[in-house]
Length: 140
Image 1 (cartoon, rainbow, N blue to C red):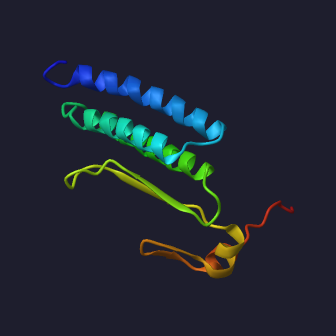
Image 2 (image 1 turned 90 degrees about the vertical axis):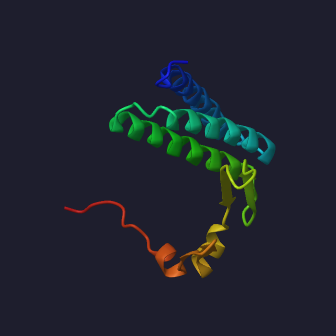
């Protein structure tokens, strides 16, 4: 590893590509359970830590890496949701000693959400916002 973290950043880039491949495969199949989710969360968090240590990178490079992490975390959450029944919730965490990452997901039942809205950890979406339908098609 170089003093600027270049080797670490290169390894993290390769690891993020591998994680993206694994998560895409999980999304294309049955998803993942919480045990696999925790392992993948640890790996993704480690990649993020390596990206963060590359302080000499340009703002553009840092932004691109942050975008990659957002995609990985999103895919991880989506892969967790696939094995869950409607109405269930789950979380995976690497938090130890007040530091780490946690992902919590809730799989709402569509008809129940349309009837009463969605509320989770302080965020609320009223049923009226979910009931709106987009018009499809165009007449000219």
